[in-house]
Amino acid sequence: MERSQILKQRKEKARLLRQEGVELYPRDFKVDCTSRGVLERYGGLSEEELAQVEETVTVAGRMMALRDFGRAAFTHLQDRKGRIQVYIRKDKVGEGAFKVFKRLDVGDFIGVRGRPFRTKTGELTIEAHELKLLAKSMRPLPEKWHGLTDVELRYRQRYLDLIVNPKVRDTFLKRSQIVQALREFLLERDFLEVETPMMQPIPGGATARPFKTYHNALDMELYLRIAPELYLKRLVVGGMEKVFEINRNFRNEGVSSLHNPEFTMLEFYQSYSTYEDLMALTEEMFQEVAKRVVGSTKVVYQGVELDFSPPWPRLSMKEALLQRGVEREVVEDREAALRRARKEGIELRGGESHGELIALLFEEVVQPHLIQPIFVVDYPVEVSPLARRRDDDPSLTERFELFIMGREIANGFTELNDPEEQRERFLEQLSRRELKAEEVFIDEDFLLALEYGMPPTAGEGIGVDRLVMLLTDSASIRDVILFPHMRKRR
Image (cartoon, rainbow, N blue to C red; front, side, top):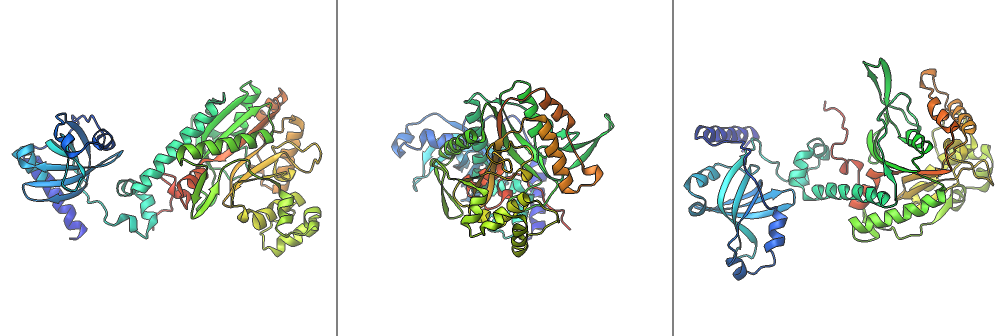
């Protein structure tokens, strides 16, 4: 039957129900159990034991399947916890309720009160004693939704994806558990959860193109934050020695399987610590979250077994290049690095420093091969404007990035807390980027805060969406964001 004909048929059913005095969208039905609750409470009882049960349960949900046998029918109800089979007989629910039921469709919401029993096939089922329509579905659910090749349609209509694909619902249940586990891990270690502005007068804390907006009452331009870093450090200056924020960041850049313009980060700061302390903390955190959500420190992602058991290797960026066959002169000389970058086909703007070339070569030559969890350390100072220099080599910083499956998952460093050097770094960064005047941002208030003194501190940001991808075996970031941004349909 064509879709237009089905829509017409459903609307006619709704009209007849209303004509007979049936409320299509009542609000007075209360449930006392979920589908899983029924299965947990009665699933272990035999057919004989169930026959002795006199109590009833009241459940509600969406009808996902219907088998009609005339004077009786079976349907599956789906609620937030799963599905349960319901048996409806005319002599049990009454002629009026049964007449209403016969006009219902798959996709409608119903409420049922009844007694649990086991069918001849052994399936735990609710025998309905009362039945009520709770919400009429005017549109049919899509058939074979899980097999659609147009995955964009699933992202655009996530509500349908959630209705018909149990794996999708499970992914977002796990996402919630992961975020909760991250939060509890830090709270148990005396971190304070805070909130910082999403609209900022100056975008800072990362290098990215911001989204711009305008505040009418204040008569000023504002930017959606690209990172909360500079605000969180202000709090450290203010005496909040261990803070974290699970935050939404916005970057006006490309979209890919690993990038969404709006994404979630966990960012945290710990005073009297170094980047080495945070690497150990990160190992402990990921191990605990994996055990809690997956049940093991070994996780299978896209057919590859990843082992989150610590300790994870530490490898300097330059040593990583040498291990991949890059010539030593490349890591020691800018001109050699420039020649190798051109050979690799890396797009250059011109004027890159040696440190920037090293970082670009690392991304091209090394990063795709970092499959198991590994910390890459000792980043060039030119690409780490907020990180403290190494005492033994001022050209490098006390910074690490965590890579898994060739992807950056976390970024952390010992913080630069010298206000004069921080200003110099900002100015150097801006001069190298050759920005237009309107694109130059220096957060003077952050520098002022540093002048009041920030204790030795280490900070880290973790890409929550990418971590969820790993722990739910999701190939694209769009699979772990409920409503990913999509291009307009033509």
